[in-house]
Length: 494
Image (cartoon, rainbow, N blue to C red; front, side, top):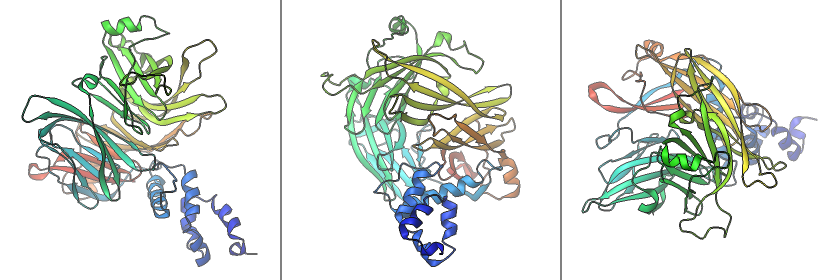
């Protein structure tokens, strides 16, 4: 009996255990096996079990072509990502959009494919398709000008990509201000403004410095303690206030919030909003890992019918202490719930610089249900060291998938304006096993430029804004090229 003589159901079960590379190689064997590899079910299973960064899926709405293309590209990037020094796989592209009205770093690159530029003091938010060079106007103010722009991106429930933006506008005919929340969906057809909602002034205040987007929740806040806290259920588009400061484990917290200034960080996940507070009076009191003690709280949407106020208030559900440098906390793996114990785990990535080394850590935050007689559930934290790179890495960027597989880069800038990249991968997909991380050898941009010819130097300054997409292995950053032109450098690495 030959392999091709097996029933199709049996063949499908065999193919489900193959990797992406093995499925592609199988196409070279014979026509019958080649035809089998074009079935959606094969790529549905491969997508589901792949240990790669990838968009949310597999979903019924996603075609076989999308699943295959996404997996093949991520596999190609990942083959050499942390096994050898990164190389530039294609010569840098220089894209010159309309920077004239751009102030500061109010620009974003979404999924490595779309450049978004708000015209500060102007009426438009523009979007450029970096692959096809198309220009779109995704938002236009009506008789107003844009004063500020803050954005965050996340995966949509159907596997697409959504950018949420808080836009502050001023009317041209009067000294009035307004805040609007925009939702822009990106697909192969281009950007689409899904909704635009006005946020009441008594809720948002006059400023926003933080914006965090999860798959179901969006939260906004000022950087220091105040009343400028706002959450949005992105499914129902209902606004929620944060409750007044309170704490069970620290009875003085509510009072000290009115007397001290707290460094604050809000992170939206699929199930909760995590709020971390560190008094500035103890920020200098660090532990050996460079972290200081903080209060961490988890908030969730109130149960139906329990809050009749307008807008309704989030419910404080968990509380605990943690030692984290909350300035460097980034979401690594979204909420994973154990149905048996009721515990929810959320994982973060941080880094600290000590003794000419930059160390990277995974932090596992566990939300436990409240014990009998307790009002709040407990929050516990465990920390795992992943890897280190020599020198001081000023920038870290990574892309993580819905199941905790991440690919990223560390960027080091030396004293001679050199730029060095290190590629890393992280597996944070298990609730029971420790997180693991691997980092590859570094590549110096100066050495690359010595052997390759580019329109301008690829070197960047230490404080440059950097956009990164791990699925494509693409870095984008703005720099001044020849003749003083502002360009967007687009560099593909692998």
